[in-house]
Length: 464
Image 1 (tube, helix red, strand yellow):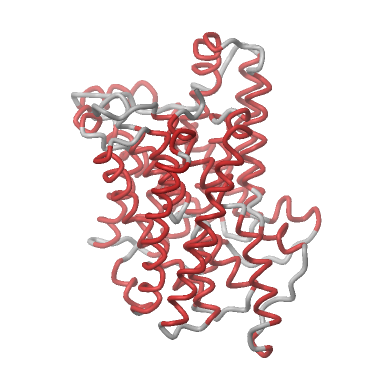
Image 2: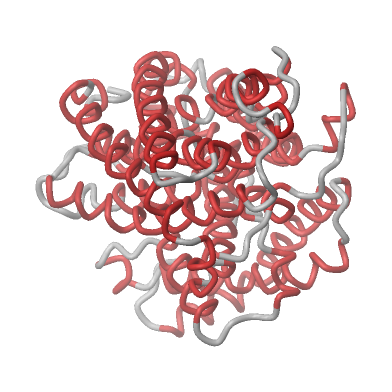
């Protein structure tokens, strides 16, 4: 996969204090996501909503229905495109990118996302549970590895930025009371998996002759949240320039595999949606891939006999496990391994000097956006009964935000597929992939035991 540190995280800009609020990708994801949530709340209070902006193609059986929708709603699609373009290009310009490179690339991405939605709304696709995220990923992989695309289009494929924005919007659909209820279980389960997975990958990597810094980067990439964790830890421990891209390659390869394997395995076992969502959250290696897998499994609810629960339970359980549970370990691992690198490993190649502030610097700030969005929606709808919440708040406030969230995720899934070139995967060699794969086996097995047997009753009744 042609992904390097700069494309994953943006230009390296040293910032401190208040400047971080407009010079870090995480914060821009928060501003965009919370801006949408606040606008939705303001319109809801005034008796209106975001529905006009949150346009989606309708379900269709004959293509004439698609053309009719585009003819009737093209001003809404154009306005939505301009909105996303303005939001993302403003942020990326502040982060040091060139808007003139991003604008044409994002125009292509938006049109591709629209096509994905249209295909995903086809009755035949719905019947076979071909969710738009899976269609986006598969289509991107096919295009990237057959006809290919010009490299200049990569400027629009901002994988992490889109998924962070989507996760902030996801907070609006996860009640804060649910976070409080499931948080301790999610953190405990995530902590067990994170520590065990890291130790296995690191031990196997060292046994295979890998440098300890590469083994540590691989270990954290598998133990936490993939791309972000690998980059954060590589910088904290003074890893070689190529170590982070090697870890990212392994993460993306297995993340793509697990998008298909985990939902199918859970379906074969007829797991409740909440349990499957927790297993996916424990076993996936990237936020975007996990959301795609959880959403795909959630689509089985009500369509496949023997699968209990709701589609939202799958997304909520995944989010609590991955975002609330595992992602917060980024800063902890970066801090701990920086100490190990500077005190135990060779001094001449030591990592950055550790200090307690490392945890804050490496903490995924977009998690705050997720929590704040959840709090805002919870506060706005606190006076509603459950019946009124479902009748009034869901269609008027929650549903439009959820649809805009889906657009952000489709941008992300397409970007993953369109930047994954399998011919580049072999460049990292066998040893790093073998070490990471050993962690995959442990991760999936341990996650299954914890999600199904140890905490199964908790996840099966999530939100009830």
